[in-house]
Image 1 (cartoon, protein in one colour):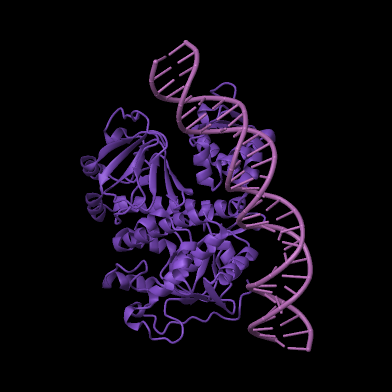
Image 2 (tube, each protein chain N blue to C red):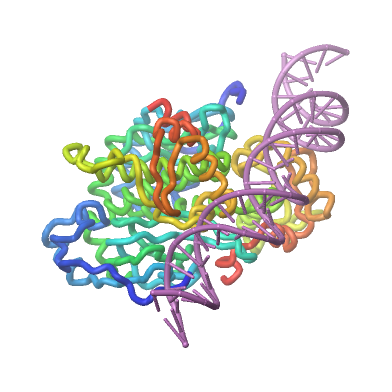
Length: 257
Length: 257
DNA sequence: CGGCCCATTGACTATGGTCAATATAAGTGG
DNA sequence: CCACTTATATTGACCATAGTCAATGGGCCG
């Protein structure tokens, strides 16, 4: 929670044409003219790892897209228990048109760069730029499905299944970054079989509804059982990805697919 | 799970003007002309309590609104563990434009009446009827917030807090049905202090991530402690609604508000 | 009346939480 | 650069909460 010196992320160019999330963010359906309008409205905001971007219950007068970095959406009980209800990755949308109080706390867990719009003008723009609303609907529907999928994990999976599920998700995300033609280009570990955890043990616990001790013990157990190897505290090498996925407790819809 | 004889719900009129969910459903923003278009496309489908409306993973070629009755959205693990990820109440939207496989199983838990549209024509209509997409976005954003709120319950609340939270929600919903001028019109129990559970113990357990035994025990405990009274198996009389809400484990955003 | 379904209750167990000690990184300042 | 402080992670011992298994009770329908 210690806010470190200064946020690092920088963009080589502030031109929307060069934007790394141009094809997936809320603006991805916009044509040239629409992008020009957005470009005139946008402003970048940077947050250092550990910084809170918005507090649950606070007034929120902007919306925006995560350009770089990772943030968490969390909610707390009065006595301090914390549940992470979502991860915000590059291209994810922050904030809610049509509501001025933030329902969840948003915290940067790595240095984060946001592409922001003041909320009121953005809401006005949505009315005559259907491309934005359409894309946002699509994104929100995906997030809703993901949230509900996560409810299955929180409500019904064991600690070991929760950990395996989380690792499987990071593994899949990592694998997706490897395009086929680059396979085999690294030495030692096969590509798509290792990754760095973007979350601390505490953050993992908050996301999975577990304590840090249980997170630690289950990681150790998966290591002892030969499913993974752990280097330092953040690097995970998956030795048996098939096993990992079966340990995650397949739901039957995915199994059928 | 036994499908009973025949679905009961009937509408006095099939005219959209008389529709009980006209002001809250996905069509609520539509003007006369748009409603006429929808009216030409719609068809009603009825489901008896216990019937499955769609199976997770199945192709889904329609979307629609719940007009009457209650349905659950659920997801299963291979070994049969079940998690309910949402309740569908009148005016809620079923199905997802732009996706043809249903991610969750939808089951009628009372007799249900759906106002349906074939998916493809509905998707086409959304493109030139912004009112529908705008309203749908608003509804989906609300559902996303509700799902995330539920994640806090599933991940971090104790069994007692889970039960108290569920009862508090039903109580609030019930209280909302009482308009101020009708207060005091019933005898015995004060209005807004009692309600019928729309869910069986099993369905409650599936929604809260608990077993039916734990649900039963916690209800008994709340009764013993004088927070509620239970009549038969479905009727709950809340004796101390303040206590009930505090037992639910307030989250700090709500506490602040 | 008998059977079935649903709910309740009890006894026992197991999973994961709590508390505490130790280890390991990772900053901080002399 | 090293001692010191502070965060973060691991491990152990113990305990509490909720799950499992099983028996019993109650309502409803044929």
